[in-house]
Image (cartoon, rainbow, N blue to C red; front, side, top):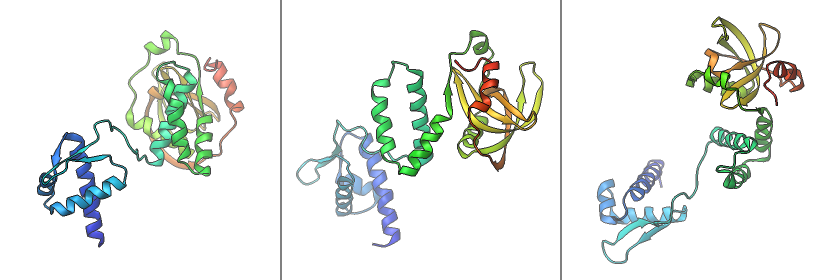
Length: 244
């Protein structure tokens, strides 16, 4: 089978899956007309889909109906590595917060995702999780001062944290003054619902903490940094009462 035919079949199978999820019952004839192929081609596609794990049911007889098992919701979930990392980190945060809601199945989900990683990837995720700190709930005063987060800033800080890359930020202090800083995002800290980046600040040449919602803009610097131990940041965290 040529590359064009292969790509066409892959696209058609994705389209068939979407149609079968939306409609409780279709016929092979309808599906063939929709995709402008023969009924025999659709029949072969359905065989491939069964082999891939789709629970396809068919009614016997000419022109019989085709459906997905009504009990079927999720079979296999394909996640890119960054998506899986984000999900594992989110699960880790929920587990560390010890919230009784939804925790019953999170452990099982976490183990299934971790099992899909190679040993090297598993160790990378383990190191990332160890760099996320959970503290007590933020005071009502701090919560009242929380402002909407910039999606681009959050994504930039998140990526710099994972890649261990320095970034340049424009930061608004509590008194409203702004300054430009080059920082290394070593740790992330949640004082619910406020997120902080625990960083080495090259302007001050010392460890500092920055609230996500006060970062106005962010520029990627590209320089890699070596992770500093948490002990180097503990004094700054304790001074701002950010550790339990």
